[in-house]
Length: 89
Image (cartoon, rainbow, N blue to C red):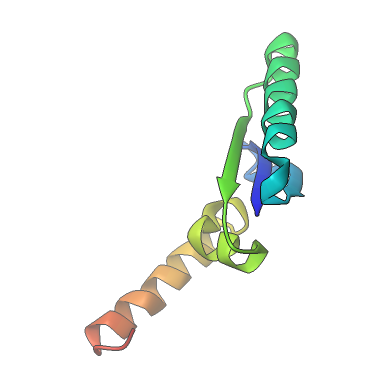
């Protein structure tokens, strides 16, 4: 799957979230470009990314910063470090 995210860094929040089938790559790219051009015209500085993942859950794991606040990310990293220290995967 392909995911299109417009992210407001200063607020730490997702503005736009769309998902596309792999066969809709061109539509996803066109949507990304349209969002970026619109933001540029308006002088808005948001991050716009197109990401690929098997599903939304995988996307949340690999790109957690778009879906969690800093406290949640640090907490998750601490748990992962504890598991690594104990030799767990």
